[in-house]
Image (cartoon, rainbow, N blue to C red):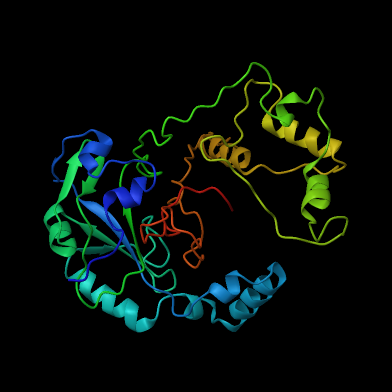
Length: 323
């Protein structure tokens, strides 16, 4: 069985942050053989290398992607090959239970387009598939040494859906070699030292500091929503509301139209759905769909979550942060 380089648990979670050489020493735990199941994503190689596309300028990337989309060849170009996908599906289905589908109806996207196959593994199946025994210490689900995979399984990356949902915090060691910095009382940077707000808006910053190509041009663009997970439209007090504060900011920036906040809209919809109608019938909101960061066709980021582990977080299980 071929060994996957840089596939230790410490490569995945703590590369460059600890001098410890074992999981037990790094996380200061004493594990026992795992008994829980684990869902693992196997990410397959792309049918074609996207380097040329990703290193091209913005206009070229957008034009190329639009052309591929219009031709219906975007994901046959940058998804997995049919042979790789079918071969991996056959091998993995003999070692565990395939979960997910192309629509992500159960929260997991398994498809040729996303290059991802999700597999539920019992502890014995994990050991058989990866040729290493899994261990647990509380929520920490780990293994020792590199992982191996069956011959013929062409894998570009792995991801383990374990608690917590945002990933295992890295183990850390003091890597300063005794270096110290003496911080004096007072501001530590120019930004902290400014006595007044410059009053510069985001659009001005984009134009003056980043040469944004659309600055000052009346160009229709797609709606963009930015949501900070765990925060949404939370405010420190009851007044002003997020909507009022956002509209006040837009007005000061010269934008007279109000903005629609997704979180507020969702809350209003839920409240309305739970309300009782005038005829006395009770209405209840339906359950929200599984959280997905993007459609199953989204191109994963170029860089892995860890510099060494050959893993890519597939778009099917990241907490929603964008629309």
